Length: 293
Image (cartoon, helix red, strand yellow):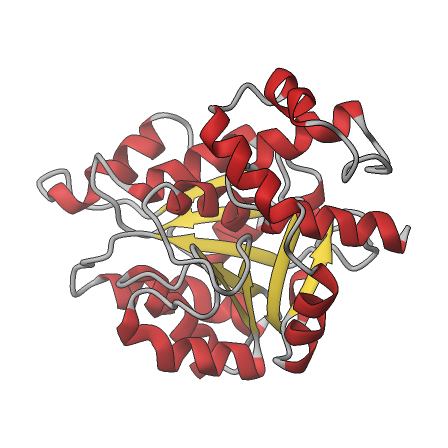
């Protein structure tokens, strides 16, 4: 088990492959027993990737020392959790495409519960958004609900700060690795979360954030939680991607209504039109969520 775990983490560090490629490798070698002995022709046949990518992948597969990396992570208080581990977040494990490996900084027990809600919205929120969030979220935080968001500007930042200032817990899921916090103005907030809450990434710490990682990150934000609350969003918004992921994962989607004249509320209003639950109070959220026990 431990050897398989190390091999999975090693695969996860290799450049040139992603979630689907690891899935394909596991389909053909479920125990990863022959991973270091397979010829390049095997990967060319089953991974359907350009030869240049496979070459990069094989270079990392046969040169990276995963043991030394794991020692380095341990020295820097970075946790590494694979999908096989008992402490892998319960709700996240049940989505269609859960991350094979998570990198964590902070208290992992925070996201190993059922009482988690994700909060997403505009990066340039209106003046009323924070008041709406206070009304909706503070009662939830006081009732031990963890707020999960993506450390982005705007609503994400407000959600993390509100959880902290209300004496609750928060989890931040980032694109890229811990060594490259984005946006840079949230480095101090990330440090606070890392020290007293939890930072989570699907990418090794040295990974620089790229555009394509943000929508991938959104499936983790929604997948960790019972439901996603969209506070404010334009018609074309990354928040709507998170809401769509939540729907696909069979989770609840909640939306705060806004004026029909306000462009920044068009996305949330359309979510309600499409079947999201319109919320005015924290009770509107709790009435839709089932907690075992």
